[in-house]
Length: 265
Figure 1: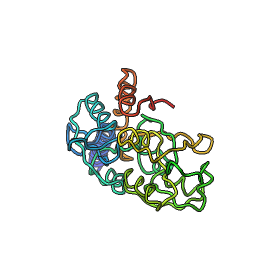
Figure 2: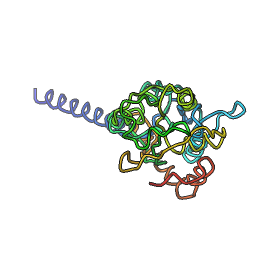
Figure 3: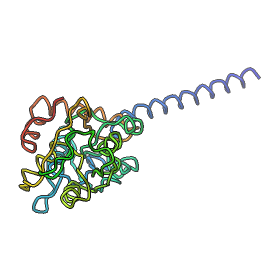
Figure 4: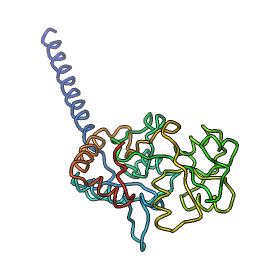
């Protein structure tokens, strides 16, 4: 009987050891980047939001396109882009349709609860965009009770609501500008840098912008969004961002697309 008990004890110890090793293996693997396709960084973005990501002569380009390409290179991966509409973009990361989303995504507390973010790579300042001859809106408080264009689910839409405006959803920047021109909204709320690029590239002399003071809306840190359980990818992305900041790549790309460095707070 004593021999039998001893054998059972050894067997149990063996099982515990195997389970312990398996758990250790699982824990170790969880620190590695989880990718949709091995060796490839699959990136979700809109592809319709200049100068962040857009098409020129049919080819995908823009600040965030080049950023993703440089990130993948630093990380030792190929890169694959998956153009996706804004309202499906963040959910696509959760559904593992792509590894991360790079699309001027504000790092809000609500999003941080459900997803991981990289360190910020740009800092965005908010602005109201309106017709050039408009004199009704002189400060952000004047949007109270007014129809304001902003994409649903964005920090811009949250800020419209915060200041008492009525949000009118716009699927992309060009649509928001059309709503302003047609008088269907009093103004659009978006990033100052997005409007400056739009004005420069289209020659839109009929529109103007009014920067919202950071005392009213703080400059918004923008990060790369990843799955909540993808700590390994977050670590690798942050390491690559540090290198791109140190070697001047982030500043160079910012100056190329925004005529200034918006990569620092």
